[in-house]
Image 1: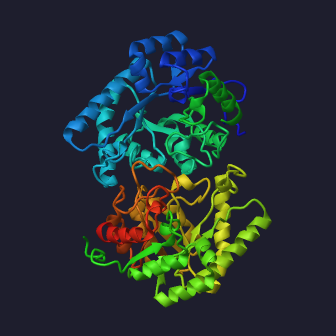
Image 2: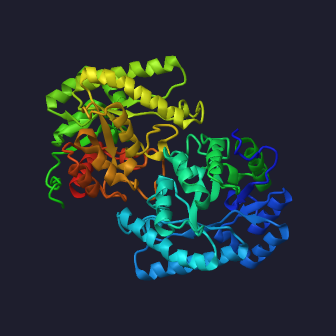
Image 3: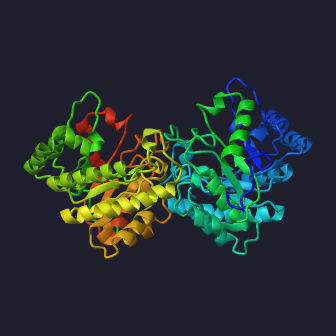
Length: 296
Length: 296
């Protein structure tokens, strides 16, 4: 292990749980407050909640429970979805993203994670066109506008490049290089207001990964997410693996991130319809802790 | 339509059928010879057969039928799978790839398409390790060695970058940029012995696609494959779409390829377990022709 790497093997001080990881356990009616309680009971120090989970539990109740447990956030999921077909939908997206920023402030998040959107309409199965370049231009414009709101609130925006298999319907920013180009364009001063969320699942395959992590540097590395890529992968969205069950060298990647100056949480985010969502939530959280120590 | 673009709207002179497109039609016992007959009956001028289909029908019988119909090949599928765990498997791969080259010569193919392999063992569900950089190094070494055999036989090698969702198990060369770096490294003289196969399905998402196609140029562009990316995509391997049913702007991409000097076939390659493989093969071929004229 290089000297720069923090020791994660003896406790889970730097593990965060993305609350989607235990969002729909079979036969277990866990709302977000239950998830927060279960994390706190295990000494888990940080979480990253999703907006829909917060809305269902109530923003104030969630904020209070987070304070009560002394939990930190590693990020707030999520803003974005910037591509649009008309001015009305563009404005609606802007308004919704402002609300996401306000919620992130209320919850004390370190950043709002952005999943930027793909071709407009594609997520609903009805893409409005085939012009991904124009969607990318809309995304750049949308981030530029939201960055003003984010600066006012002192809430950093973290662009999350998504795996290219989501380019059509979820995010047309698909490499770290592309995300960092946007950062350089919109925040050349590296003010800290704009950066990236590096999710191992989305970027592990990239031949440029090491050099782009170094390029990002401490100023731009706002979040680091972990899970694993399974072989075979049976579903494009909901077949992510537990750390150690797949092919990603997570410790090597953390080494690169930490060498670039990142000192934050490793956030566990696993969508797993057929496996981990079928299990008891407590068992999943305990497994996350064990695998974090062994594999991250 | 830019002046450089060939007119594909009135006939299918430049369409090739990758024979996997009709490889397992439900209730229809089509071997490769039947497929060749069905293509010839429709005035289809070119095909790209797969090795397993050739082996099942017999190499000499296939070669004879191709000559009888006056068919051309747009490529031979496929060599590659270079990553290995020991010297014996490395040698076995080399030998097998030499046989693929010989078959390509017998069939009169313009190039052998290379799917380079991922992590050794991953395709069988048992990855030997997590070191994708070492797999990539083995791939470069394997192509370098095979290039000698390919030059002897005057049979060009076409590296096919595969979509990043296949990085673990099928090909760890995942962008056109990466494939062209290999070409520059192994054939700096641009001799024509080494190039790339550009498959729209694998590369459409790439923000660098236009510039990398231009970089490839006429010398390196050995094959151009088309199909479409569906939203949603229900299977990582066998849910490719018919041209026009998805989100890829195929005519724009063909414009880039032709602007770079490519004058060959647009090869239709569709793996579609739930849709096109369920239909009559003749209907599928007719649909390919119609969509080629309308969308490619």
